Length: 394
Image (cartoon, rainbow, N blue to C red; front, side, top):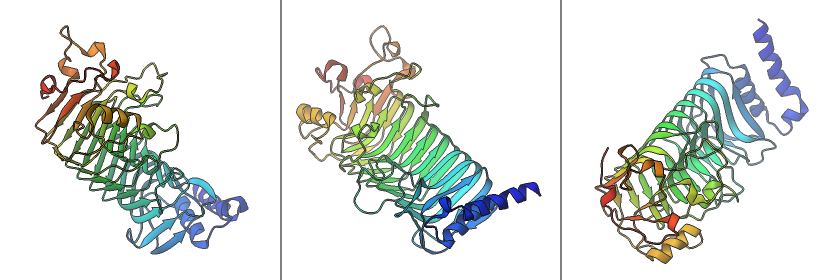
């Protein structure tokens, strides 16, 4: 009884406080009240139509809730005139959450952010910023962070100034049958373990699919990531990330980038007409950012790239990015499809200077999969095109 009174009090508080409801429609108040009052196991139905919202919608501390629209082209939540909050929809400290069948657009910050959620499904959602891509767009369209057992399927992400579909510091993640376009990064898996990224389309982004481990985060190490059967095509969009963002250093024309992480397998993808770096395996040092996190490992290891199909088109790498300019000077219009920065951790090498089995980078059976070790630690001098040291399997 006390709990029910508390929920009703909170709901009326949201409705009555002027600072919370300025500019809110009756429908917006109704939706937020439903989120506050929802009992475990509830289905919250979003009506058909274009619903203008002025404040972040927030679901916290709930279990087994479904938030469902009438369809991606039928229920549209728009935050174009958002007055309070940054996110469009925020879900925190929850379990068993399903978000499906609606479009969400034009929030000030992330469109949907979920944090601390176990068992989470995004299904049939379009998350987008309308208009031309620009740095003032929010960082992430779909943004689960510190979550477990996450399924993202049949979703579309457009216009994010960092990543369209971003999964950070999470575990057990499936991203499939999604479309990411006109973002800086189409799909990004960061400091996340046990992720399967498959049968997606990532095109017209700056970078198609990124698998990163970054320093200064609570979860230190990702890995055990499979990227397979994706269409990673023409990711040549101008980089419009805000200044200082790590993805701001991704060259336009990047298909797949594996940065400072371990246990990643990239296979059976179509990686097509990405003008600068079709597939790049690099250490964090390539970013030229300082490392202050003493527990951070900046080197990639145990990487396998195989049975991918690359286009044989000759394309000019981007010269507005430092790496792209280096590639242009070294390779002209014939940049190898698979690039390793060549920066080695001495602990990974045996007495002959070869990588120990547990740390190998294995590259084999890629159609049109030309290769180069960039020797970046030697100022790109002595670049090797020899694939033999990397022809191994796990």
